[in-house]
Image 1 (cartoon, helix red, strand yellow):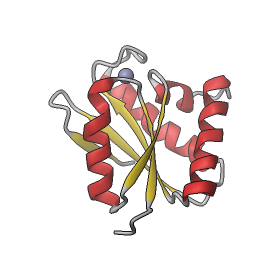
Image 2 (cartoon, helix red, strand yellow):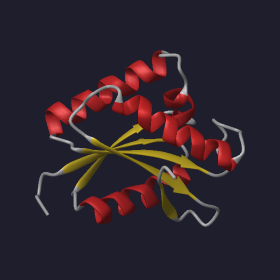
Image 3 (cartoon, protein in one colour):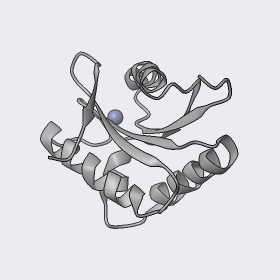
Image 4 (cartoon, helix red, strand yellow):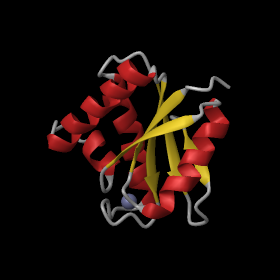
Length: 129
Ligand SMILES: [Zn+2]
């Protein structure tokens, strides 16, 4: 593990998500720190075709993480019981994958992955089928 290594998480503001997400990413990627970029129901914005102020601010933060912290992994996070994105879990998982495609279209030198927190606040990876 590099002592100064970073990944980034595009996460909800929900306090129940933070520690499980940080622990999972540190274990999964071997990074020491996770830059946490938050907005209520952030994937709702990132999955949209509209580039709103949240998307703009999020992209700027990711770019700072990439240029300043040499981040090479970006994790998109959604969770059950999200106040900022009150749609069915299956819709949220579809939004995650669409958000991944949109973030990849920014053409930053990063790998983008999708995470889902279930009702036990366990982290599951969501992949395209
Ligand atoms: Zn939420």
